[in-house]
Length: 355
Ligand code: PHE
Image (cartoon, rainbow, N blue to C red):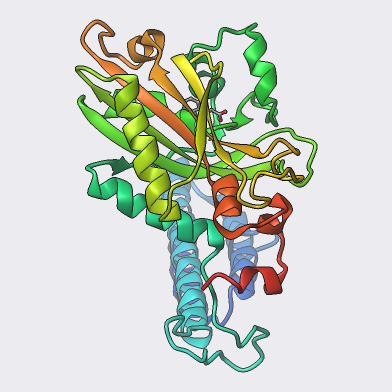
């Protein structure tokens, strides 16, 4: 190898050692880019070393070229490893500086934290939801969850709503640009349950749902439901009614007056609306019961064979019952709350009354 080539190799090795020290001693992420530019940039040290290539033989050129490429990838790797270690340090420091124990009361926050010194509370809807979950799990039900941003198939198609079915208009909602939608009911999880569990099965699905609604004392765009579904060899309306009674008795701990009306939902046959006597006004008529004295809390019915079939089961072998409890309305009846808008409100004097 000529002495020129030898010198270039030495220069490359020296540059490597220099960069190594620079990376090792770098104190912050922003200096990494400087190191990279001064070594590998257009006006960097490697470029000026490689100017010496012109006087070399083709074999030497390729040897030095190889060494230069190795240096490049070595430096890139070292820089990205160092960058990662800066990130790790950052998060370690964050975890140390901003750590606090959420289970300690009164809370001890790091200095400079703005926060309420009051103990957090459980939302009235969650309180009732938790109670219902206990009741249903004690009867052998599993609790299922599903996405709030749903496909048209799960929210409508699998529930026997054809594309042009007028019943879709009863549940208008918000669509994303990718044609997903905010689920209008927890029934959207029925097909997921049917597909993922083996019959016989009993499930409840508590969760948040959305409608494109004119908001008033009894309508919200965002509210909560609890779906229930049982699938077994023989399921009848009397099983359904037993479930409904158990549920209401447990919640209200007293006899509540109910009535059953035919109700239409494409995914049940027969379908019912179960109303209860309005407990806000005692049946005299108020904004919550739209002056009728009755409140719809429990639409329900026997699962339509098409739903069972779409769920992958044989409707000749399996039958089902389902209900869709309106959690907000139930909680309103439970506590005599006269306006559904309170639930989404941050009004502390409302929210702190329940536990
Ligand atoms: N998903 C229906 C609604 O939100 C309620 C329902 C559930 C009706 C299950 C029947 C059976 O309006």
